[in-house]
Image 1 (cartoon, helix red, strand yellow):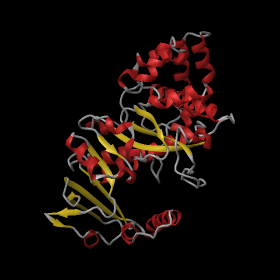
Image 2 (cartoon, rainbow, N blue to C red):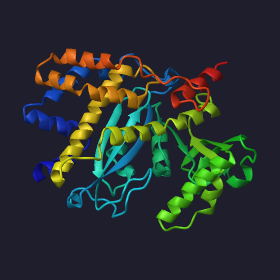
Image 3 (cartoon, rainbow, N blue to C red):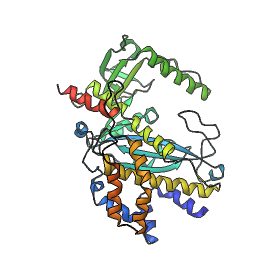
Image 4 (tube, one colour):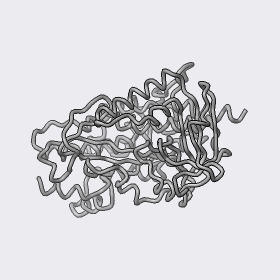
Length: 394
């Protein structure tokens, strides 16, 4: 068991080439046949049954959301998957343990396709993921949180014809008209007021001609952000950075997407979409039980985690087939229905039911009842995205 689990850590993506090679060497698995049925249909193009979702985003070749999530493991596995030490989990934050597995993922919001998940040691930063050895298509846009902020990476993808959209990281040098910009002196002071400038990033200006967008936020929003800043500083035994504290009063975004492609309002709406990948990881852990197991044996636990990841990828295939053409679908609601259909898939894989028929029954079970209605307040991200484009056309 230990030898098998140790070997599996080298597979990279759980559905990657080496994983497929191992299956072929062992005569293949029933799941391969399911993948064949799925890949012969809409998934061959990475799209859902009804085509591409979020039609207004078709001006991009892809809309990538990237992030990582950590799964704590028994300390007996630290020789295989090293963690970051020892501390308990807290709301919205993973525990730090001697052994941990970090999965990284790049999700195309436009077509639904997953790149990954890739597995790495919990102590390693997401920037070391194998995802960063993969070139994104020209004309795509890449969105990530502040943990991915490096000028070297932004310079690299810009040169490859890829757009980026991120929050500004406090302390990054800004240049305006070849003069160093004192950001606090130019930011708007009235709540809701906006500012947009074209700046160069970094002391040596490795990233040029970037849009800097700023909006003053209400005091309540700023206070919530400052509370999180204080909590983070206390947790890590560090003093609060005064600049970070002050900049909490504004939403600050940097992007190289031209204004002709995205207005200020559209940039804000698209940045909010980054939370979709956070929600996907939450779905996988809370509903898919990715970080829970039944065994007490460390190597059995590791196999359970990896089997759960495979199952969740298969679940995502069915999401693409059943409802990806509806931009307002409820991912958690659809996943709940799909989990109830596991016996149907088992009958298809075991030959008790034609596999193609089993897949059709599962897809049909989702129906069209999981679309999030448009609310008068607190619009969902999908409705906000579409409404910004509709208003931009009037």
